[in-house]
Length: 150
Image (cartoon, rainbow, N blue to C red; front, side, top):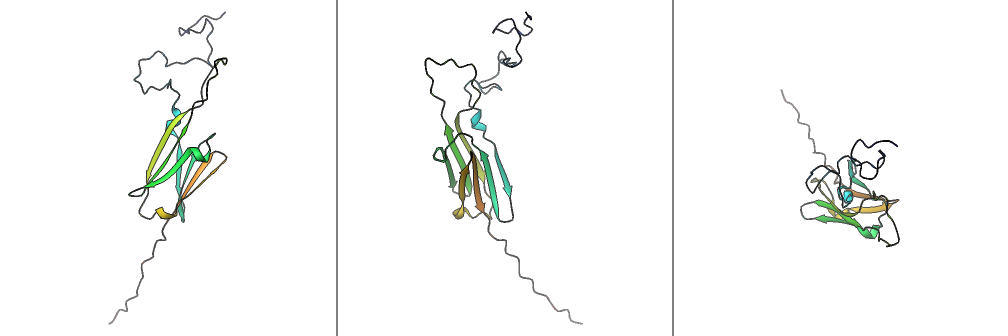
C-alpha cells in the first residue's frame, strides 16, 4: 500500500486522476475549482472578420438550437446566451465524477460600424453555433485627377 503524501481523504492510495490539489485552499467563492460545475459560463467564442462578414463560432455541445438565443441589442451589441440544465439525478444512481459543465452563459460583443445588424444570420450544426454578420461594402472614395497647368 502506498502512503498518502497529500492528506488524501479518499483512502491511503494517492490517485493522480482523482486528486484535487486546490480543494483545501481558502479560495473565494469564484475559486479555480468550481464546486457548482458552472464552467459553461465561460463559453469560448471565436470571432473572425472576412472581407464580406464578421463570423462568430461557439462550441455548444449537447445544446439544441431552441436552448440558445442570438440577439442584437441597441448600439450594435451582439448577445449570445443560453443554458444547459443539470442532468436529473436518480436516487438509485451513484455519481463518481461530474465534469461536464452546466449553467447559463452570456457573451456580448460590440459590433463595428460596418456591421449590417439587420441581416444577421445564425445556424447550429453538430453543436457549433455560427453567427454571420454581413459587412457594409466599403465605398471607395471617388478620385478625380486634377490637371496640372504650367
